[in-house]
Length: 233
Image (cartoon, rainbow, N blue to C red; front, top):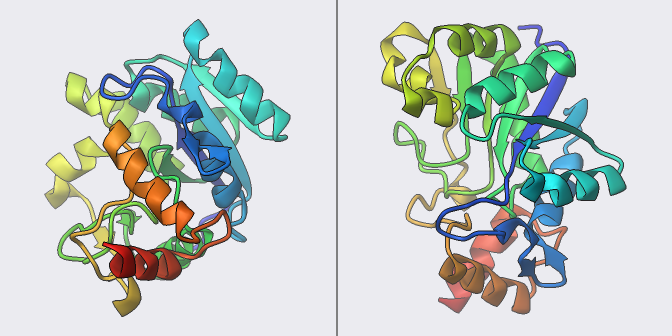
């Protein structure tokens, strides 16, 4: 399947209810948002990385940070995240969209490339490897979701529930019978569905900082991170 121009949309904001301002909390020597943007940018099959955030003034530092890294930014509604992502995809001429959550500092560029290759080779509307879906057995926090811009624009037009506007791909999952979904089966070294590496609370960040203190770095692969996790807890 031809997938054209691949744009990764990194979804981030400062106004987290459970952990306000977490994007600039430090994981080792780098803020969370830097981990996500740097690691995403290393994927070979992504044509462009775009930070998508809200128009609220509290998110101005996110735009400044991404711009200083040489990355583009799109700003839109804080609450209508689906609309914001659809607008960003159109603005940056995406043909295929990868949705990346900035809560995942250990996102692995190799897993992003694996996702793109699988999506390109399978007859599907949507694919993912970001967590354990349909018994894919992936640990949470290394991958992403992928779909065509055409499908993203379609669901942005027809989704009316507030939950579907807030959670970009929830409409697809709530109407799974209408779509061909492909949840990539985790390779054995990543098949630890009980493990989560996302940051939703200060405690989550503390746990990941323990891994960093034990050798995990900006260049660590997912399998190395899992090995570190399993040997230290």
